[in-house]
Length: 212
Image (cartoon, rainbow, N blue to C red; front, side):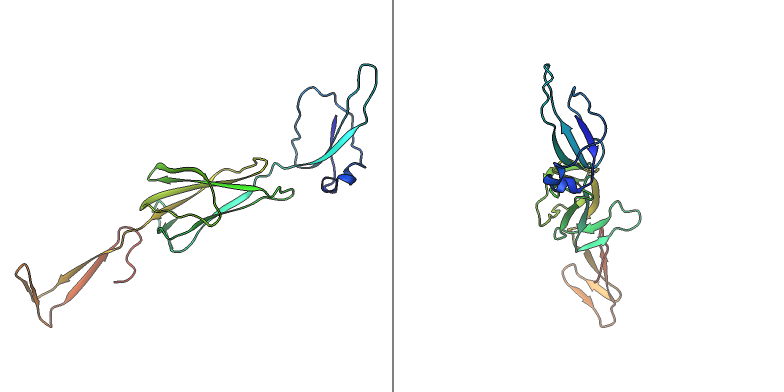
């Protein structure tokens, strides 16, 4: 057998592939072999018997694709960027959709891509590796999440998993009302005058108060 790097047109058109001839000498086959470099290759092969009878050389052109897909995750509104020192990329809610986008790369994409993700919740696996379903998914538990994700093509080419670190905030702010002076209460009823200042103080554990 022998393997020769050839122009891509030969892999796109088998009739063209059958008309070309490879380069270099033939190697005696001993065990299964691989082709280490990307692009279109011509494989030629034949056998002979001990009487010297040789079959006609057979050949096939094949694309070698070792390139993994590129991929990224998108986080949709509502979301707020985490502040400096916060252990997250975004604060989100259970209405913030997360999508995964993959694209098999040139020069020879096979265009069949599978997407997978898993979810960590407060340092423990909440959902193990799951095949992504078009349309996206949501995080429903309040607290810190890490979403890991990756893509692979039909040839099992895959890149290293990436992640999004998100903090889900499902709790509303807490608002406290305070009276200034003059003010009096008997424990049940509250009494003020038109001069009594009334103050509101709001606190939020994560993203901060927007309006009061």
